[in-house]
Image (cartoon, rainbow, N blue to C red):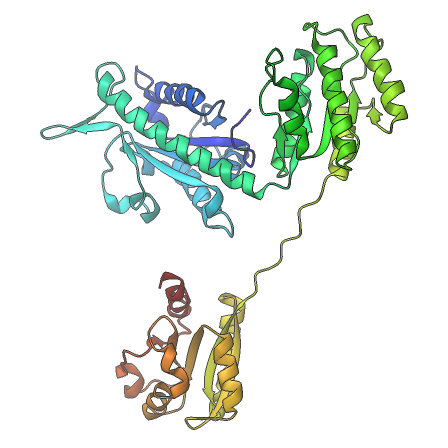
Length: 466
């Protein structure tokens, strides 16, 4: 059972095999310590690392790719030869791809852990150089050595504690983000030991679909406020699900606790006008004597009051549950940014490639404004378009530089000056005027030789940076 509902794996630990082949099995010790410390601070965490034996020529296995895709926090355990490994490079590169995918950066985190100092800063991507990291080595007079958990116990555990604290904060932040995005709460009643696995499977599926599941932990059944705590969990639930066994439980109080949760759920859902509890009775050849009063209560009393009960497979229960819960709202595609493009009417025939570049490659919606010389053909349209667009591109093809200077002096562009909002896109035939043109009023993008997609992209990104 993991900590982050939106991910199958809380942590993915990427490391070079050679880092774990010494007599002390350094990586094994490191991973065990991380798991133990996190269990004490946040609870159970799902940690994935590849331990399969590899042979020369082995392909990068699909399960590694799947594990990276379904991970919240990526720990790059960097040794001296980490970047010599194609497998480590692929793991890191795939995670970076997920972080940079639309909507990905807010839901994943990268943490570099240096077992050794890197041989060169140049071998590391900027994404690793520019974020906080933790070091598990010490510099000595002319060399360095990795920290040994036994020999360097105090130093090792001080650094382990700082790192685990950062992981704790990251895990809680990611969990908090998911709770804000949750589609709602689902109550899955606590069960006896016999059905814990079934409850966890259902809980995991619901969490993966974006629902919060309550209660998160076992109730303190002998505490005075246990009924109130159950009612509080029920008060915001969209749906209540109860798993009941026909076989005798090893916990004698299970039937009584099942019935109490059912009674409270039935009353609370009726009070709030929500669907009646959904009860799944585990298939069995016979009903144990200790379970008969509870089963009779479900099949007779509750059924007469509109409570549904199922006796099929757990998968059939899941199907019905998902049909009863709200579906995620379809994602609305982002509205493309609108860009005003100022063009002299004699250059309209040359504008097609820029319009295609803006729309197809840069996700922008070009809004051309025609000029006759340096005078807009429609002054009102110019002002209306500038009001709707944050950025402006002057399309410079066949005109002289005097035309460009005249446009830069337009009163309508007075509040758009600067390289984050105004761009001069020089294209068409090369000329001394274009190659030597300079101004502080706008960004210059030279596109005579090529379309200079990178230059335009930098222009669009500049506004976000500003």
